[in-house]
Image (cartoon, rainbow, N blue to C red):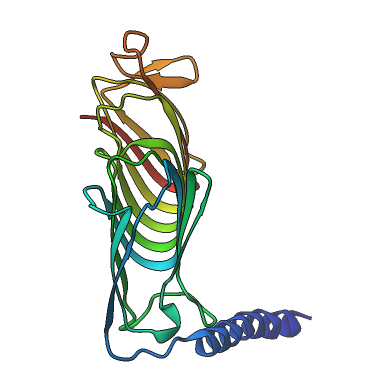
Length: 242
């Protein structure tokens, strides 16, 4: 009996290892030459827009300052990851979608690279949705006219800059998987943040605890209030007033 248990203990990890190796081999992406593309989208007659950015794996950088609705630079060396950009306008509202192509797995590994540098227009009111799988993201959103933010990240590290002098209240929802999320918050605009760390740690700099929430000194005194909801899985959440 002990011998059978010993053999079982050896065979199960081996089977798992072989299975994972087979999956990895089957899901490996074919790395080729680096490809670079530029895309730009005009707002047309849209007075407000919903922008949806979906990246499976890679490095994502978002800033404001675009002359058009969106100006993007895309670099990748896996042909199946070629981004798909679409834009539709219905009435006065536009919907922009930037989606990573996929031919199977979307894991980064070895020499695989996928980099998006996207600039958005500061003047057009924007409801921003970002779905990030694995990798790193830097969202510099302080100059945008945001009407909402929904960020979903898988494994990796992200920094979100919400330090703008916003004239309109909006809500920001940030859901993290495994990794570290840093959210930079304004001092002149009221902030009320709810944060749940799962198995991770929550750091709140420049905020004070009020019930189950964190608030800054401007909360209750400013006309505009920024509502932030952050949920982390395994990792660290950093809230910082700057």
